Each structure stands twice: as structure tokens, then as C-alpha cells.
Image 1 (cartoon, helix red, strand yellow):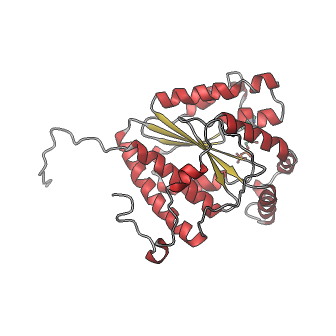
Image 2 (cartoon, rainbow, N blue to C red):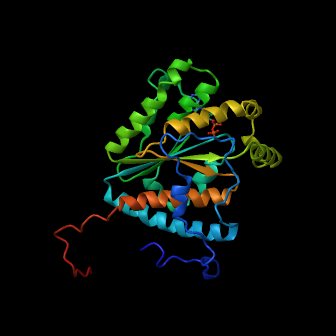
Image 3 (cartoon, helix red, strand yellow):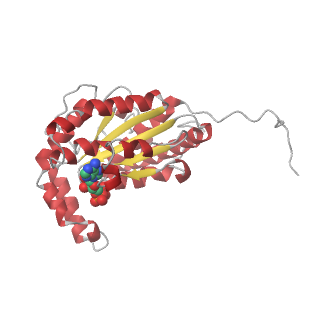
Length: 289
Ligand code: ADP
């Protein structure tokens, strides 16, 4: 199926639609750019309105399903999607939405929690490298090795001289993955402080969601500025040509979903994954009885 040919969409909204492929360049963090989150508009929608964006997201998800099927069948390259963002930025929600496009067999999700004793006994990339996707897979990291320059820095779990050496190590690691057939792309979901407050409150108020709320969330929220500083440095120092960061305005969930689905689709499309050739002993006109 070719993108745009047979996909369903509401024709009445199609002519008012901005070009979705423009999002990739617009949201990409250029290598060595000095990112300032203070001046970043987390509510931006880049000309999109909700109904049109929702409709376009469905088209993008159909496209992703097709691309993933090809990538899986081809089984030669892997794609690694890294998701980071402050608490309540929407990492889980993004995964839930985007994963609807994927065959679970080819798209493992790995959530990185506080490291175990075994993990801490190794270097910080050990558990990460073990979890990278196999050829043919689109692997999603919910948190990642970036925690080792984020929470670890904010809580001073290791001295500055240790975490400050990690940006270059991470760039080297991602370059190694890229050189060995894994396309790496990273999404930072940016919400502002008031949006986090509203999401925490909604989580607390909803009896089906209160279990997700912990008083520790508020202690982390009190470190907002320290996290922003850590995020900015990570974005500024580790966006490379082979493993770019995309800075996603994520106050509006519908825009976040559109941006992530589109950028992921554009990236896999560039790989042009192909179905393998039919086995040579399979005739072209076989009728099976
Ligand atoms: P969620 O990702 O949904 O918030 P949890 O509530 O279990 O899941 O949070 C996982 C926690 O693990 C986060 O607080 C995160 O900062 C922490 N974490 C992840 N990686 C590391 C790490 N390398 N060192 C210390 N803490 C980490």
C-alpha cells in the first residue's frame, strides 16, 4: 500500500491540513543547538487543529503499520525509539497510541526503572545494550540510558565528573548502534509546569488513576528547575545526525501523537524496508488444492 493512496480520511478536512512531513524538520534538535526549554512553547500545534490532527494521526498509524510489517519481514535493520519526558509528560500515553499501529511480535517495549543490584554492578549501558531491538524490530524505550544523565544528575547519585562524561559515551554508543544497522530516534515530550500540575491533579481525582499517584511525584516536581537544566543539557549535547532528538510540544496530547507517529513514519520510510524475494522454487501460478 502506498502512503496516501488508499488510506481513509475525511475529504472535508484534507484541504485544510498542513503538511505533516514538515514536522520532522521543525521539531528536530540540530546537533550542538543550545536548547532552552524556558522559551519553548509546550502548547504549540504548528498550525494543526484537533479534528484534522486526529484524522491525520490515523492515516499516519496506517502508514506505520505497513512500514513495520515490511521492516519485520525484511529482518535486516532495527529501529530504536527512545521516549523521555518529565513525570506525566505522556510517555505511557504515547506508547499506547503509537503501538496500536504495530504487530506486538515485532515491537518490544522496555521500561527502565531504578536499576537492580545486578544492573548497578555493571556499567550503566549494560542493561540498555541488552534491551536494544533485534533486526526487524521497532523497539521502544520508556525511559532509557538518558536517566543516567537526568535523575542520576538531579539526585547526585554519582559525582558530576562521572555523569558529565556520559554525554560523549552515549553519543559513542548510539553511533555504534547506528553503524550496526539500528536507526535511533529520540523523542523528548515537553510539557510545562502548569500542565504537569493539572495532570497530577486529574490523576489524583480519578479513582481509576489514583493508584498511579505517589507523594514522591510532588518531591520530584519540586525539583522542576533541576530537571529542566538536565533535560536541556541532554538535548543540547546528544542530538546527532545518526541519533537525533525531536523536541515535541506535548501539552496537547493530540498534537504529540501526530508528531511522534509522523516523524517515526518518515524515518522508517527513509529506510525503505522491502519484503524479501519469493523463494526461487515457488512457481508464479500455483493453485493450491
Ligand atoms: P514511570 O516510568 O511510569 O514513572 P516508575 O514510577 O516505576 O515508572 O518510575 C521509574 C523510576 O525509575 C523513575 O523515577 C526513574 O527516574 C527511575 N530510574 C530509571 N532509570 C534510573 C537510573 N538509571 N537510576 C536511577 N533511577 C532510575
